[in-house]
Image (cartoon, rainbow, N blue to C red; front, side, top):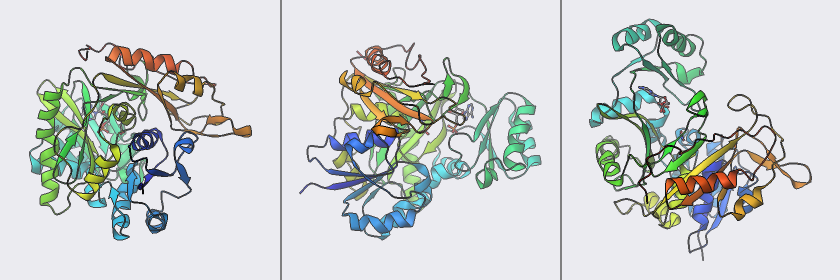
Length: 427
Ligand code: AMP
Ligand code: GLY
């Protein structure tokens, strides 16, 4: 009998996970807690409240699931995997103690220091005066980071003292991020290209993906406010596999060893956001989950059986070494709703979904739902990610845009420069 997998979360990342799991030759039964109009076609949607970590864990045994794969950070930090394991359910994802690597930037800094992992100089503060003193000692530009989860909005890179003061004040005085901003990491400003390096681990063995890059600002040329990510590409031509291996040895392995040493082993995906500075690589942040939208460009390239890969990480016995991916590249282009990254307008009717899929591209749904008469309508900031593979970055890019251009809805926002201008050495 084939296994049953429950994917937790309902965005583009989870749609990509559902599709990757569905490719397993075993043809697993796939359930999804959360979901959207696209996932509804590929998995059985289970109405569960993801904020209710204990409730989800209590229901999982009754669903007969062999593996739970958790997408978003909030339930991880809230301890969903601990609750699942306590209920006897196998889960792919870190414990709450290990998810602190994402849930607290100050904790991540402390672990990096203990593990000898290269990162920017920083000072952790809890009041405005100490924050201003840290800015004075580190100099400008300076990054002001809310310690806790802030949905990608908790970091300001300040180029003036006034901006730094404003960002510190927002966190420490005005409580703009609530408890997540009561502690602030003040970090020296750095420059250089960024890379997202994701690796699966069972707590010891490490299986990295090829390098990926996301495009965070809403506007072309990386202008305007940050979003959750407007597109992604893999591989990154300036991060060849040999360099990715070196980065995993310098970053992921020591952190994973340090977490084991502390008695809080890390199991799941460790995602390092790394800046390639003139002084060498420096870790910007850890995420303790698959990146969104990096996953939409990584999983279409995966040649390993995703079900086996994630199960062996969750159960122990993961094979060390890079995951197997196909040659070439993948590019994912995000289509966002009117108003995003502010309050997105909902309910705009989406057309062209089938035509886009017929090109061979993957059309991953994020913020979509069913409107009147069964039409698929917008229901969130990031609405869709259209991902295509190609022989090279340029080829994948052309295919992704050709498919994305077939999809229309009122107020659609799309960056036209995802994966452009890369020195494309993939072929
Ligand atoms: P983070 O959530 O820590 O990855 O920060 C979000 C974004 O802010 C990063 O992707 C960088 O573009 C930028 N950033 C973070 N830390 C720094 C830093 N120390 N210097 C320059 N830019 C930074
Ligand atoms: N793409 C950035 C993130 O998933 O946080």
